[in-house]
Image 1 (cartoon, helix red, strand yellow):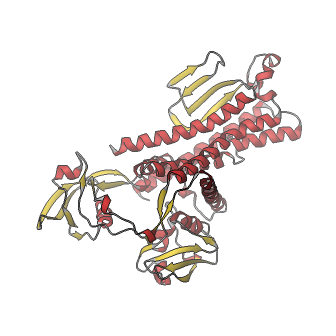
Image 2 (spheres, rainbow, N blue to C red):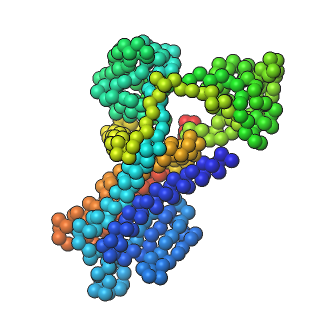
Image 3 (cartoon, rainbow, N blue to C red):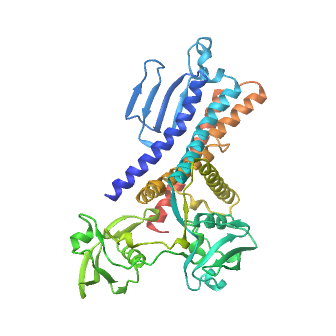
Length: 458
């Protein structure tokens, strides 16, 4: 069931974002009266084709959802008379119009990302403050003297109102020399402290970089007792005889402290028989249960029982969360801040990759996107909307890179043509395009290999 839920979320996310990108190209091409011969969502042999009578445009759905394309009339690719079709051909349009058509795809993704962020703030959501819940013993944070209940308010010169801002600020320092300062204030005394970290001691996981885990910082979460409230129908818990009201005392002899600890331990046993120690009606009983499995972070198999706590009793203290809900106009300012934040994140990662400060192993492929989309949907519509916004913005920024086969590469070719005052031969353009596709395939293969390493281990 989880697989189909994740698959549905992945399909919706990829389909919507590709459609938005290609629609941008399509609409601006139509605006400048360029004949659109085909618009394809996906690559490979089409499984659905529809052709309009008026514009004679072919609409295609193809199985490989790694992108799409809009094929425009180009007299350099056809045997038809250039004079007959020149009024509707892409290659006969002014350079400024061709540049606009190329830029329209990434621009459409940027507009969608902004709108999605804006809608998030209009609908409203709550975000935990970056308050430390626990410190991992003997970690960098522990050695530095950091404590639970401290709120991270700044990393170096960057203010941090949320965990995402903390992570982005820390990622900006990956591979750097010198030191990094984390400034905290102790809740509720509001006493400010500065912790200095030697960046040479930062051991980065090249496959799954997690600055918080690297430093030994565990986020604060409200204490929830490991008491079962809801049981999913036909779930492993129901089939194993777990009842509502049961309190989980131990799993395989290991004491369970709270609900988070219960979930953490269950994840270690995908599709396995486990021994549970349960308190039921003031009696202690032993129960053997068979867990189910689903995809976790990095598409690793993790165990689950299909039970939940009483969510109505899970309350975040007001001083531990920030609530974001704005009217239409202030939401624009908040959305702009989010756009800036994630553009900076993409910029940091690109810079670290190109300078060798971050390994290409961090790249996630289709499997990682599959998992992330499913997990985002599980957390609700607003979270899924934020996920779409981030991916849409990333697609736009990647496409703007001046690389062969990408919109940015085509943009540069058209600019070169304008400077030379004569067109670049079709043979050279096709050679550049094939080079770009080869690079694209290599990157996808590398990213997919990274996904598989995360699943099966190094």
